[in-house]
Structures are given as structure tokens and as C-alpha cells.
Image (cartoon, rainbow, N blue to C red; front, side):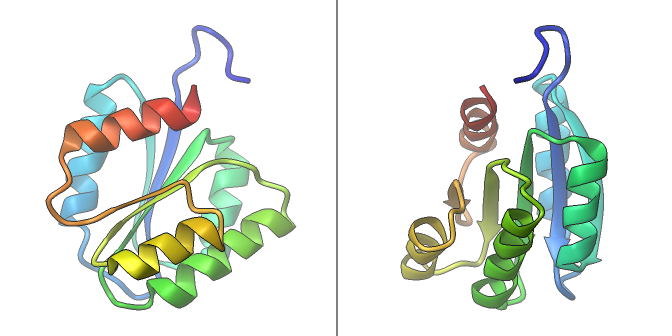
Length: 133
């Protein structure tokens, strides 16, 4: 449980070879504006890098963006590595993820929430507030 005066720490990254990070930068700014601390890893990160950073930075949640179409492989692999390292933080995903695959990521792999294009920054910020409270 986070100390009362300590900021909520959110790790944001792209997974795999995805380099389209403009949206993730906008989300990072919105989370900072909402009073959260953001650890921004950026684009083209492998699952082990994300897991290692989450562990080292003692984050409260992880945000992953996927635009490359490999979310159905990369995100389950990330979730598996987090479980293996016993890192129990909510993972929120967004990007070009079809609804049926979004449901699979949540139901089978333990992703907290999946946002699609058109989601508002307010919805995303509120999701991170909710999952870290």
C-alpha cells in the first residue's frame, strides 16, 4: 500500500517493435497533470525490460500501448513474466486491439483494462486512479 503522501507511480511503455508513441506521450502528460509520477520507457521495449523497470521503480501500475498487431502475443508474455517475478500491479493496455481480443486479454491473461482509439484522457486517468487506490 502506497504511503499517503507518496505519488502514484505509473510505468508507461510500448512493447515489441512498435515505435508509434505519440499517443503514449499524450497519456504520460495527462497522468502527470493528474498528479501521478510517470516512468516513461518509450517505444520498442521487450517484456523483460518492462518487467525489470517495474520491479526497480516500484511502480503502482503499468500502461502498455500496442499498435503493431502483436498484442495477442506480447501482452500475454508480459503478463506471464510479471507473474513469474511476483510483480502484482494492474496492467492497463491501449491501442489497436479488437474487442474480442481485448476481452481475452482481460479474462484469460489478467489485464486490468483495455482502451481503444477514441477513449478519452479522462477515462484513462480515472482508470489509473481506480486501479491504484
